[in-house]
Length: 103
Image (tube, rainbow, N blue to C red; front, top):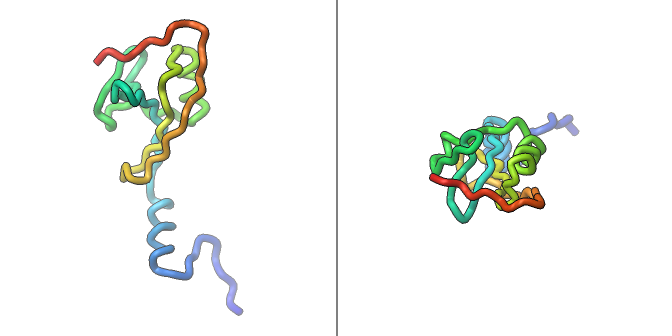
């Protein structure tokens, strides 16, 4: 039996999926579902996904949310194709009143 390389698939459909994940760049964004806005910069928000701040990691995004008292935001692991996006709660609870974005 021949050895299989890691990441090699058995069906064409599976190969397409593997290739998609290998060439997609994942961005880590903070999103306010109610305001329909992404964090752009400190105190700035945008409804345009491409203008949103790309955090280095999900933990960096959570830390930012906690420091800025943004307990209403979610983390978006954003792919080139939005249908593959993954949305996660931050659970960034703070004791002070949260600040809502002003667009």
